[in-house]
Amino acid sequence: MFTGDHFDFKRKSPEEILREMEILKHGKLKLYIGSAPGVGKTYRMLLEAHELKQEGIDVVVGLIETHNRPDTMNLFTDLETVPLKDIQYKGKSFKELNVEEIIARNPDVVIIDELAHTNVPGSPNEKRYSDVQDILANGIHVISAVNIQHLESLHDIVQQITGVHVRERIPDSILNFAQEVILVDVTPEILQKRLKDGKIYSSNKIEQALQNFFTKSNLLALRELSLREVANDVDEKAEKENEKNGFETTPAGTCEKILVCIQNDQNAEKLIRRGWRIASRLKAQLYIFHGSRKEIREMTQKEMKKIEGWEQLSIEFNAKFILKNLKNKKVAKAITEVTKEYHITQIILGQSAKSRLEELTKGSIVNDIMRLTSGIDIHIVAEQS
Image 1 (cartoon, rainbow, N blue to C red):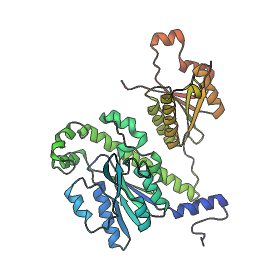
Image 2 (image 1 turned 180 degrees about the horizontal axis):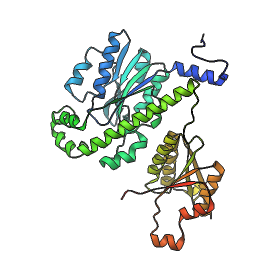
Image 3 (image 1 turned 90 degrees about the vertical axis):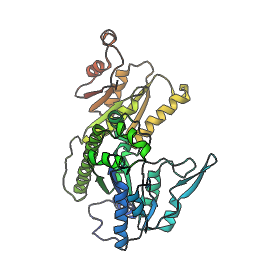
Image 4 (image 1 turned 120 degrees about the vertical axis):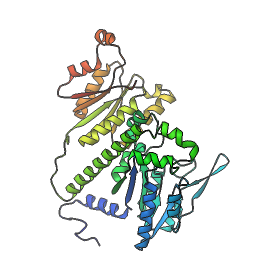
């Protein structure tokens, strides 16, 4: 029977109480975040596993990537491991996290590395973070790790900093869901020294890494990004805790509603991510709008796939995706109608592909929107050259 220590029956509705009961059944997620490979996330996880074991807590290793690092491999011993699962794909055998075996073993805590990993086709889930969600749903606590460049909303920023397109990414909601987020931080100088000493990559990859991803400027920028992201996460969790404990909070932008308008171009995903970061900072609702001259039945498979991708990204960012047929309407008119329907307060647009002369002769979407609306802020996101 639940006591008043957990629930305030006078203040909460039956639906809220049931939701809290479900949350209590779930395991908790602890996440170690680093600015780059080699900062020591896996090492810290294994140290914690040994500490938990000494305290009499039932802890197992579900999956660890040692990358043949001696210090990490030494810590891997004396810990119970759950055998990995064999997945056959294209005539080859691959090892993946054994979710079913972990749930059957039912430990108190399981250590699972490389949260952003994409599973081999044929696995129950496409991504490892989905495996972790299944394990948490069975009441098992999870300690995991990820690097900052794998966060979905930071994809464009990381690519701009490093020139690297990070393919494996996790939704920001995973970071928000984690009950505890720990930043594993080292200076760029220490990280470069670890690389040169062969503690991160094999000797044949060291020089290439130093010239590319592991430059000092890259590592400084990624470190700053990590510090800022974790600090924001701490602030958000503190605010939620205050709300839960009945303290009044009036977060900035409570009534803000942000509309991201995307065209059928390569900058659409970048705009969605930028919109989410602005909405996240302002605690605002986010809407994604795409206007098409074609009916859905007229679209090619490629066009439909692109729209489905935008919609899926919108879902990941807890945004409403709005698809409308423009018919004979001007784009500015359609955007204006959406702003009125959803009471939008801020609009985010990509930089116009029109030349200055074309804008003067044919008109500017921004000017048209400003003429048709009032009291709405408009943000223009510049394209990367």
